[in-house]
Length: 195
Image (cartoon, rainbow, N blue to C red):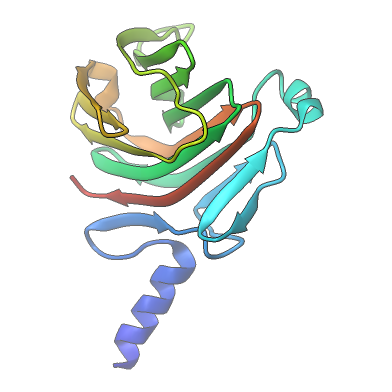
């Protein structure tokens, strides 16, 4: 019984929940070793992370808005969360490795672009793989990013699912992030599991 309690306590402190779950963050704690909330005043309340962009910080960070990084070594994984953007111009989700971006999507009122970053690109230029729906303002949107080898199946909300493929996606990854520009952004229920 003591061992089970110790494992449960360790999982709650680190964000690691089980052998199948690689990381979990319900934002019930102000800090989590795997989480870095940056470029803004993030509040952690009601099981969500919430931030309103500070325009001075946006300019200071070369027109990059608030972001949350999750440090996690993985190659294939399914990442789930829900987010709500209010008056935001864009929402950006990115998988990275120690050399830079691997996979990214950017949603705005004009739609979503889904991109991969070829590992052999000397200037780290991205390749557009597909397009998706426009960013919805003021409502919670479920997100699922399922990575398997060189493929990603991206689900945004209830109505969009698209599988894309690029060799660069199969690279080992060291973190993932979700960020936004302008307005207020909330995220909840981050969970990363083995596929």
